[in-house]
Image (tube, rainbow, N blue to C red; front, side, top):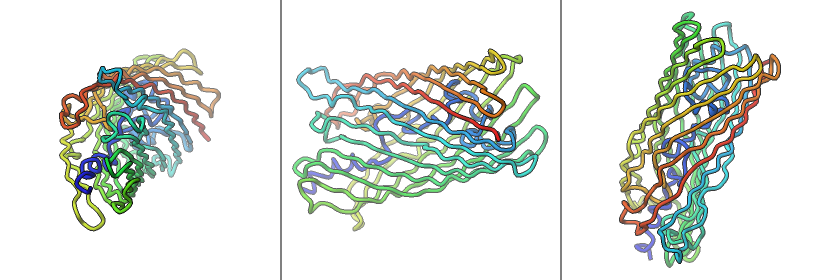
Length: 398
């Protein structure tokens, strides 16, 4: 029985591998509604509001003495697997609506320095298949949540150059399930705290042009929890899995062409190659399995524009291309990931001198992922996959 359960457990314990994601791998780039309207182009240089804490803490020096911003993103992925056989239980709609909140606060320490606090979710999602679907050994439910608390400091070194630094205190929690043959439904739950950091530079070439450079460090987690089998409780026990979340670096440019038009661009690099192997260990020290992942590093390219229609209203637009880190031969139902193209639109409304409301919408066109290259799964089909994102944000300056 233990031999029978090893392969399903190896798959199910992949706590860092949710099935549907919205940026590279299973990252969540949805950290502001103002940024979504531009497909997050220029994120490390725009410093439009307190959400710059996530994208580049150095941008806080451009903000007023005190500001608070809160955003909510509604992310709806659609992913339907099919092997072309109408008699097959294909699992139904694997995606589900995921609300992702963000909160940011900035205050002045001096005319040149700022303190900020960000609370957000940099990774995570929820997916679920029908319990009796054809791929139930590989996945039924995948639920990953992260919470990142990000205190930050920024200061102006010169009139043109600002620097920022932050601490990332991250909590990760997972709840996964799948079919383990004679052992019934296997459910794996685990959580952990990890620590990392972020730094950034913002250089203002002139009043109309600025360049931003930011870096978020990798964070190492050792997820600890329990594996339970519905039909054979004797197999239940504690498990651990090491998971390293990747480094991310971004270079952004913002150019104000005239009083109405601003252009934005961004190149981001995510070091997903840190995720090369996943080893699952019982609390007793016995290795259940060691799985080679061999994920690839990825690039994200984006360009956007903001046009000011009046003193109160601005419109935004953006395009982005986001590479997937998952090699074709490693793709599974937990990670039906592929390259995607973003189209985004947004509005910003200045209600008065203190209050701003931003809304954004993006549609992600995703190249249909196939499972056929992963011959070990025995799942020859492919997915029809896209994502819609709707975001709203309120910013108040004191």
